[in-house]
Image (cartoon, rainbow, N blue to C red; front, side):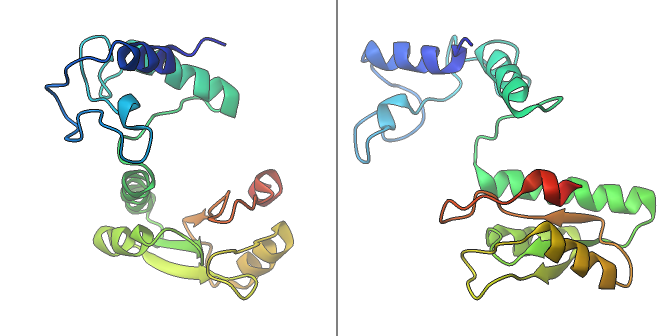
Length: 174
């Protein structure tokens, strides 16, 4: 598989250009990957709407994930969670469903603020005795859903978690 975005960034960094653009560290090493940190510059494509190396890389990622479409986020999990919960709240309103989401207790902290801003009620799903690891199993999820007064509009789980543990996503989805 081709890696157009990675190839572009590596080529750009290899030229050691004078960086008169964002980000502010100007490619100077602090933690290590700064030379690869770029913004929307000539040849790098635009994140919205991607038509070049980003679009091709998103299509490659979708193929690897088995998804219809994959979109990259420029802010990581915070922006992705905000966008997902905003769209979830709109979906609930359009379908006349209660704006409630069942969330694994180890969810990113922005989940709470984003849900509050979007008018979503959060019901917590806990497993184990840690807020970092939350080993939700298909049986535990099925049991919890069976006792809910009405089904949540969605279930939000973190996998891999902050310790690298993976959930049985296929089993949970079923």
